[in-house]
Image (cartoon, rainbow, N blue to C red; front, side, top):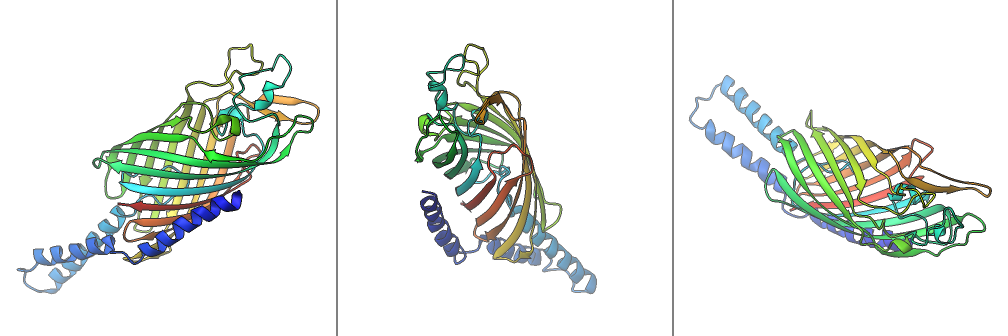
Length: 363
């Protein structure tokens, strides 16, 4: 299952990326348009050293402005704060998820509670069961489309597919098989608060929709609301900095532990991230940029299922921080490919390792 997900993603991404390099180069076109305009402005000016120096300086400044304006988001895990009309295909392969029902952020409350004795018995527990997974691999493929109505407003939607493969279960609680199918979906909007040639500040609002089958571990069974503030800055032609600050709010959730209490199993989750990119190779047609990101989550409340052979704990882990390393190759026609790897810096984790492959084409 894992191989099939990645094979499909690679077969779609790589041919498209390779064909993009032979397409007309809009970045080159913009640069070509800049030079005649500057030349025309100085056509009637006497030719002397001062004018030549001024013209060269104007051309260099204009080319820098075009380059910065066309850079776009370079990171791979921090949310994209730019407002563009684009299509994006993303494939993830994660390994070593030991607590998949934490705050119902990845998937729903463990179905093992349907067979648990009181006071934890919950006939309506919406997650997969009967087993209690202690190690799980997963793959997710996302297709996102965004339409920018203007420089200030865009709308987007995303559909996904997921596969999960439990690698180990708590002894004595049963098992459930590998699963795959349609995952949860998301829709949202972006509002630009600040937009310039080198700096962006964007407000994003995203709503998660429970289109995945929670009994198979393919979704959360929750409608979620996720506001986020996104920032991007390009202090030089080659250096980029991006950041995010947001929160994930579930509008509902399964009953907590014990079930007669008023608390819900789902929890509110804060997220934050910082990312840097630097162009190690740049031309009119191609740019290669290594990327380093730190992404973190603060789980404010909720429950999780963490068991050993003797006891179970339901207190949610609070802090998770990951480091993400990768690179983005950008073609001049608006296409780019990102490949990255992530791992946790904290003991609590969503996964021990994750690989991401992404293709994005700006229309």
